Image 1: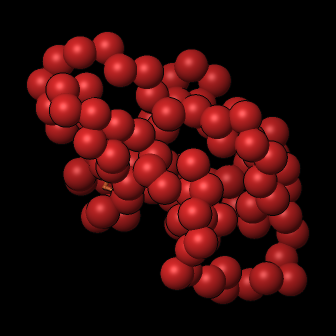
Image 2 (image 1 turned 45 degrees about the vertical axis):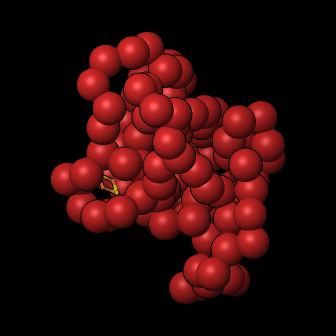
Length: 101
Ligand code: FES
């Protein structure tokens, strides 16, 4: 889902690359932090919790909370620990049950 973002890009003249989030095309700044770039693009939530289905998005931005989990090419990853690269196919992680995070 895409919303109006309260965040602003640091370098709007920088190199932009095409990525997809849940099937939507997004132009994001190459090499920037993926979680930050998705927030600037207005993407929220990044995932839903397995038990309650509550929406989640980046919180700590340092790899501790796991609220920024996304699925890239079938692998669940922390968006705050990745850089934007061209052609990323990003989806919300599939809910497979287990403890609520
Ligand atoms: S925002 Fe907390 S682990 Fe990524």
